[in-house]
Amino acid sequence: MPISDHTPANPAAVSMNPRERARTPIGYVTLIGVVAASAGFLFGYDTAVVSGAIGFLKAHFALTTGLTGWAASSILIGCTFGALAAGPLSDRFGRKPSLAFCGLLFATSSLASALPHSIGQFAAARFVGGLAIGAASILSPIYIAEVAPAKYRGRLVALYQLAIVVGILVVFFVNLQIQRQGDLTWNEATGWRVMFASLVPPSLLFVLCVLLVPESPRWLLKVGRTEQARTVLARVAGASQMEGEIHAIRGALGEQAARWRELFASGHRRALIVGGMLAIFQQLSGINAIIYYAPEIFTAAGFGRDAAFANTVIIGVVNLVFTFLAIGLVDRVGRRPLLLVGTLLQTLAHLAVGWFMSCGVAGWPLVTSMLVFIGAFAMAMGPVTWIVNAEIFPTRLRGRAISASISALWLTNWLVTQLFPSLQATLGTANTFWGFAALSLATFVFVLRMVPETKGRTLEQIESEWAR
Image 1: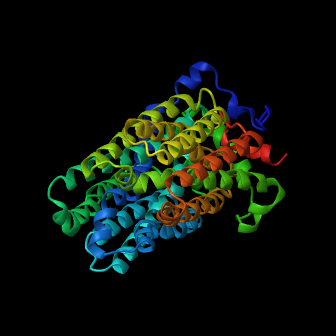
Image 2 (image 1 turned 90 degrees about the vertical axis):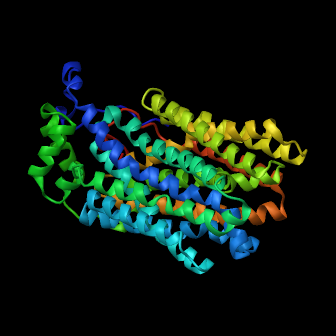
Image 3 (image 1 turned 180 degrees about the vertical axis):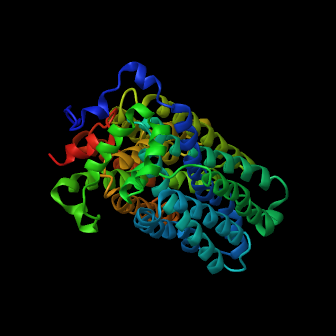
């Protein structure tokens, strides 16, 4: 259901000839995007670090199946609240200060997660980390989308997903190396603490880098800081396009302050459904059941401890490679084709994993099927969910709208992560993965019927189409 072509209200916004487009300072914009996307590195690292620690944590605190799920999922409750708060707070205080504060929360939580004396203290520390992750999952895509030129927006927002994937891969490798530093007794007493503490240095480095980037020009215009917005737009859009961009942004912002109830108005309701359901379906794919519990899944399938950790590194590498593929394709082939192909491959991969599990087949057939799923997710639902959510909402409502959408993502993530150990124990791993296959097929149908194509359009053009 592609958005139809139309002529924007302001011709200056699209008057670029090829020579003028070539002057777009993409190097500077990319550098800004990399810094903002680094929040995704902290996000990926902090959510996936538990995959290596959960087995040792379970033994250290003698956790039941339910408490094991809680240890892995407690961070996600914080993510939900962080996502809800981030939009309104960034609308008030700005994208840049909010991102810097997230970095401080990451550092504080990581240190506290390494020092608990009880599972309650651990859960509280992880909750704080969840606040940072939830807020970063809102702020980074918003910031990049509001800074990036339309021609490059898809791949620049996809840098956020790439950073998440890099964070996951790095922490898989770090966990592998840490668990090799001692025997089982050392890992159960100390190793898992080192895993959590290892995020503190990159968190502080992120804070320093964020202080060097400019504020979002759209936010600056929203709060009336026009001269600062001109300065930023001249650098990110080019001086020849600055006035046209300002005119278009002001037209989209309107006069009134945003209110939550506006999200449910007829002009915005469908955008909210599309963004929210994509976020929910992203998590119902089962991606984080694999990311958070990968060593446990491989151990249950018959792999040794070191081999199980090594397989998680392979998962991280495949995740990274196919995220690069998505970055190369998303602004060429569009969002919808990637989503349709990716969700179909997800369905087939889950069916295969379930079948191998039901037949007791381990080894490379099982690993390969899981890698097919990881690749399919990494090139489609992983990055495109964030891209679409960053694009489809009006500038005036974007903070609140994405907060609502991504909060639904984190609640679903929590539900899947909390229930996965119990589903494995009661239904069996095979039936659990067949359930993920059914949900992936439902996602394919939803994308086919509901998700529009947004490739190559300015945020203001996309906004005007929802109002029709």
